[in-house]
Length: 57
Length: 433
Image 1 (cartoon, rainbow over the protein chains, first blue to last red):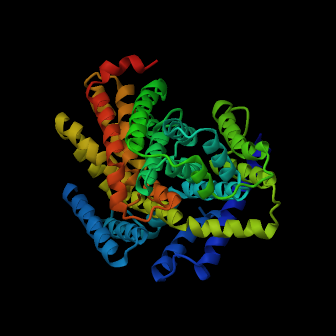
Image 2 (tube, helix red, strand yellow):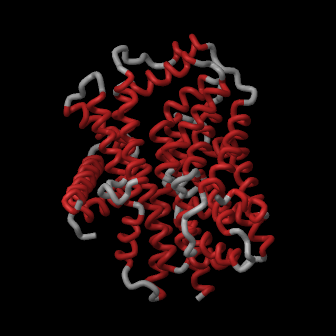
Image 3 (tube, rainbow over the protein chains, first blue to last red):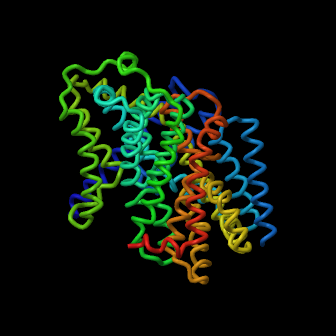
């Protein structure tokens, strides 16, 4: 059970990393929601994903 | 202290309104309003660090954001197989009775939200299929969006998982027991009345015409390919709910990922890794506004907690005379839900339970009734998550105000039923089994 829980924990890290990757990619290159305001919103949204992957929070 | 907190609340509201007018973005407006609140808090010495409150706020709803991402992955991969189109075509060709089909769609919509506790999941999983059928039954675009929204909020309030009732119960040291019937009966009554309201006067299109307008179904898609992905999803939900000590904690996001993998395997047109990557890329861009909304609502919630604004709203409300509590709860609870989401139940749901406890009322009925009022606020700004999602999934392009008018009647019915339960809780005590 403990090992399974550990695997699930790393799978969640993987999902978070995937989301972070796409958000960073879309910060620089995207088709919809363009403009400086959305750039700022994208930058803010990336913060928790990055911090979670880095185990800072 | 009271005055200072009131000033902070006013400053946050002004900041939100001004930024909404000039920047035309609900997300950045919420962030600015929250930042103003935190800065006031730092200036008063109530909180030591701006960045700590801000970043912690970004984490408040991170798990919900992950849930939205994975649920959207599942829906888009499942749709890619043509399963939803095939299922819709089969349903329409079997029956063209609008009451039967609308009732079937309503019941389908109730299931995902009832299991997960989030109405948005019902919209994600079934919204597009329900919208197709509702349109075919002669409902206008506006009514279709309203139909999807109404059953999404009812699904969120439906047992076994009603997060508002759970939070009220945990905040007031009540066991979450005996809620099934007091929640289910009013939801079925409101659901039936809503179906009559939406379906009244609509003329279903001819079956041949509906089938002509629906996208072509995949010819070689077998039944097991259609059923298996949602069955796996439902199976994992049920196992997690009923056997929590026999399996590891999977969590909803991972449940959706498992179902998503099953959907990819069941797709008759085998997807290449590049195609899978493109679908994920498109999905992330598609749901970005929703991720931004839930994360910025989290910052707003945290700012309100750190500055005492959340407590101010709660304490002001419960110190009102009882009659005013009954009158104002219909407005305050949905409005707070719009800004605090599930936090609204904690802010004044729990204090109200203590208040009603002193009067000797049946608290299970009171908590059930309150938990039926909160979901109405899912269509209200600033967050309006389920409302906006319903409009997006249905493809409703009219003004958001006209959508709100369309959902008014079902929401009033829901509020009226909940209010009657709150005013006469002991008359409904027989529902607590």
